[in-house]
Image: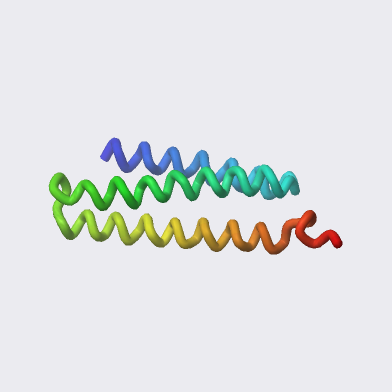
Amino acid sequence: MLLLRTIGIRDLALGLGTVAADRSGDTSELRRWTSTTLASDSLDVVASAVSMRGIGTVNSVAATAIALVAVSGDIHALRTIHRSSPDRLAP
């Protein structure tokens, strides 16, 4: 249960940082926070996959799948940021 709380607190901090960066309008800061979240979620995929022996196959696969969904969302967000970036729109 402590691990779940720790992950929740980490995700809350990353989410709040990302929202603050988005509200600031600083695209590079938003990209930095989103990239950090992607790195964290990617490490969750690896940790979940390699923990099969300790937590069981079903739990490992479920945790890996949930983390992969988060990674997919992070990648989508980064692509969206890149497409809407003001420096990308300049001639």
